[in-house]
Image (cartoon, rainbow, N blue to C red; front, side, top):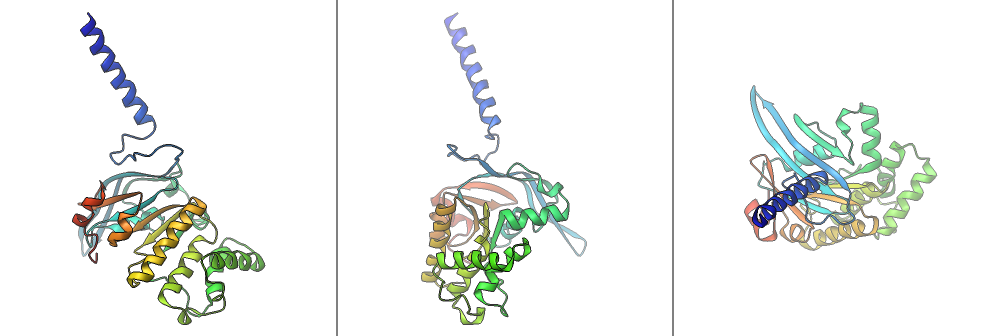
Length: 276
């Protein structure tokens, strides 16, 4: 009788544990091990992306699942052509999935109309790209003011916000310099300031150190970590930089269209440390 009771109790507790874990999202195979004080920022469930080229369908992402929580810095790594940038663009609502769901802060944003989605993107998301995409005919200050204008801020308010973030990252003496007058590292810092000027809750960066020399890239990476700590911004970074990937909270590897949680020793096997 005691053995039967013990068996039933073990089965009951296993059922309770399963229900509890599923209620907070642990059915996700990439469920993070750090839950305390975290809220769900991104939930990706069954994500698929298919491109058609000359009548041939190419499935880049298939049944991809993962979760990302508030305040995390998460790396996305993988070999060339595996779909890292495509994945990041969908997280940033710049591209639509072929199938599956992406929930931002619990909301299915792809069910919204374009106007609502654009407002959400401008308010809650920040973007940093490898090649900056700064406007060369404008000064550093004016480039950083752009997202504020899109949001409807007055020129004085936009100028104040842009000055504050540029000064915070050490570019107070470069306000009036045009893009061509800035070094590569300074241009990347301006791009980061532009991404962070409205204090978004989610920062998405595509190879932010990939176009920089090693020392300048390290400074850019340090700045991203500093802003993450200061504002609690959740950060997702596509990278092939081994030092950067190794310093992140977590790394997600993409392979055969799916996501795999990686530890530091597995990074090189996913192309990290090589140009990808």
